Structure formats: C-alpha cells, structure tokens
Amino acid sequence: MAEQLERGKCRGCPATIVWIQTTGGKAVPCDDVAFSGYVIRKGAKPIPKGWRQGYTVAGRVVRILPDAAPRPPAPLLPGLEEPPLLEERATIRETHFATCPKRQRFRQVQEDRKRKAEERQDRRDRGGR
Image 1: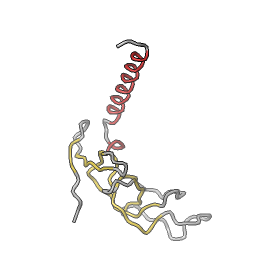
Image 2: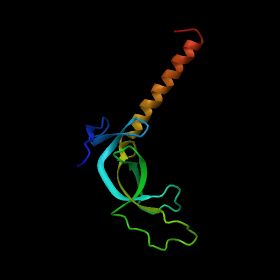
Image 3: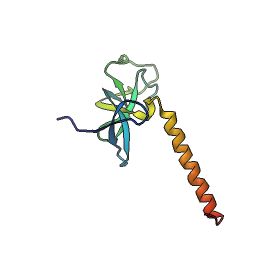
Image 4: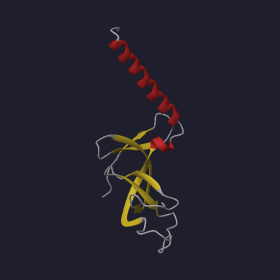
C-alpha cells in the first residue's frame, strides 16, 4: 500500500508539492515527482553521473542513481575499493527548495525576517523598544 503524503501547492509557483517529515521532525516541501533507483553509498567517490538527492517517505536523505540513468560498469574505475551503489533501492522526492523557479524570492523573505529580528534584538539590548 502506498503511503499517503500531504499535498499542497507552492506559494511561489504553480507546482504541486508533497510534505515529508524529516527524521528530525521538520516538514519539508518536496516535488510531487518521485524517482526510484539504487542508493549510492555515503562517501562514494566518484559519484555516478545522473544521481539525485532527496527524501524518502520515512524522511531520510539519500542519494540515488535513478533507474533511467545508466549504471556504471561492474569493474568501476581503477583504485575504487567499493562500488558506489548499494543493493538497497529507494524512492525519493527532491526538495522543492532546489527546483522552484521562485526560490530566490523565499530566500530573500527569510533573509529579511532574520535581519529584522536581529535589529529588534539590538534595540532591546540597547534599552529601546
């Protein structure tokens, strides 16, 4: 049975997003499009071309080589001690922060809020309102 994810619309663009709760408990907006593939081992070098990073429905961040990407040949590059791919498979969704065409707008809003909060704190520290 497929897990139900809360869906919504991005406030910056017309994209449909899904909300995934991270292992740390925060809700992250992700693209509705899912990619499935083989998990890339942490610390793997070089990382195969065509990789993607995103969140599983369990909230874990992983890198995968999607099924549509060409798999590296079995004897990889000379000097590699371990293959970069695990036999584990995962389905991920990329964070919408990485793909939204209006992401700069959200960054600017966040920076403005942070600056205003710092200014308020400075006024309080100096004894003003």
